[in-house]
Length: 146
Ligand SMILES: CC(C)(COP(=O)(O)OP(=O)(O)OC[C@H]1O[C@@H](n2cnc3c(N)ncnc32)[C@H](O)[C@@H]1OP(=O)(O)O)[C@@H](O)C(=O)NCCC(=O)NCCS
Image (cartoon, rainbow, N blue to C red; front, side, top):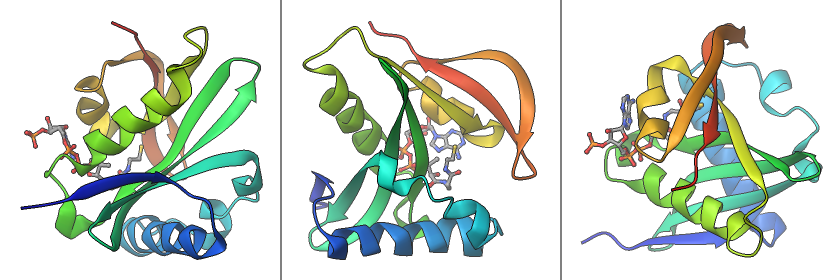
């Protein structure tokens, strides 16, 4: 049975585990350049990991865009761990982490169009027109609180 554990990153070692997942998923699998992936905004973000036991298998970061507006970015689950609800556990916990004290905050993200249905299962709604980011079709989405 899987034992998925959510954690806010609190050490350089954990940050390196997140970088390793992002390198595998975005740079190697999706062919996004390292210059774009590692965009010098990481120091402005909160970072999170999901572990299966001791192995880091998923990651995400959250950037405060302006007061009260948060943007989830760099959501990635290792290929061999997909469709096991790892991404769902990750995003649900990220939302809980930011909203449990302050329900006035808004959470947005830019979803790759190919995975917008994943975010729809997590109460995100699409808005606006599709656009290209890093050569990949995207759509803006906003978390709609129940
Ligand atoms: C998108 C991603 C994070 C989803 O993670 P995951 O752990 O596989 O997702 P879950 O298992 O929690 O999926 C929950 C539900 O979301 C939907 N879903 C998940 N992945 C989907 C996909 N690729 N396409 C459409 N719907 C999807 C399904 O309804 C799924 O439920 P089901 O498996 O019972 O059908 C993962 O596929 C990934 O890392 N992809 C590569 C990187 C990426 O594209 N990141 C997003 C950048 S915006």
